[in-house]
Image (cartoon, rainbow, N blue to C red; front, side, top):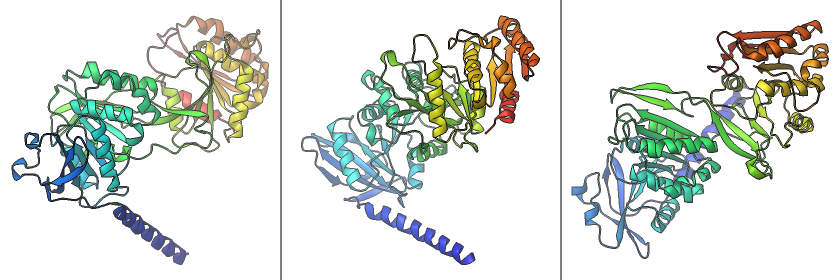
Length: 504
């Protein structure tokens, strides 16, 4: 056994050495006289704006770590490459959108981690294409990370929305954006490009640019991380301790998650779901607080929505996947058509390894039982548990009951919230047909506002009838609440009930 382990470790070491060697071999040395930039080798170039040929030049000592564009010959544009001491695997690079050497602490930190830094001193056009071809032919990653401050945000969004296959992630710092780029933000989501926005509460671009970008990204189902610095205007950009920025970039140049086996990209579109609750962090160096939210600060889950040919943008079956499925692949058959960012029960179940499955409505008459039957058959064929948890709020809770009544052998338990015990699937109301569930021993949980009118007419009547049939129904009432909850549900008791009653 020791010999085998030693052989395995030796093989892994050789693999890492070979991988590093291949990475280095793929890099072509950058030509020209080098200078120094914050302790790293710097190579400067001039691009002919007509022919787009690129030739090395020597940066002048007077420029220091900056760049004096006033000395650039007419018809030329300056380009820069900064080289790390040792390139990281894959030769990652970060592309500065504009304002060379301004608040460059995050780029210095990324250089220490093996990133190259690249720059071209012009707004995105054919010259950016030529510059991209130049540094990728030298072996740098074909999907650079981008950093854009103010006008640099205009540039990174312009490039990314027109070249989404040539971007890994965007760090946008008090960014501006042009209308044509804003109109194409859905393209970034389609290509799974995460964004991190760092902005001040007093930045004049916050309400007109950053927050609308966040709203659009959320609407399309993308991943956008926010850090909003309290009491900070448009300047200064960045943060003094750039570890957070470098960590975010280093993590987000990688693919997000491996898609599960059921999620054939020809069948499903991929987006993301996460809580939007604000958190707060103290920035010691700035002596201020930051409001933070989004994927870096909260669990984030992949969402797979079935592609269907339908008018009016009707969506197909939606599956929210846990990051680590629990044994047996348990799932929630959730009758509600939409899921809010504050769905605490569903988020707690995702964290426990449950899939959340949301059926679509394909009929003008509402939910169709046969559609739900097909969903069930498809998913258990993909390895999902044969006994899902049924869930629904309000009238959707009645639909969850109705399907369970017709399929009592295919249900673990039922959880409803402020339920109306009626259904569009069948003429008979589920409150009148509870016997199959009671006979199958299906345990149910109702949560209801104490002042919800349906507590007396639906939940209490269902409770009385179900117990008379020998069934088990737990009722939790929330004092002072009516039909619409004032706050998200405390998931602890609900999740405990579901886990306890989940069956294979």
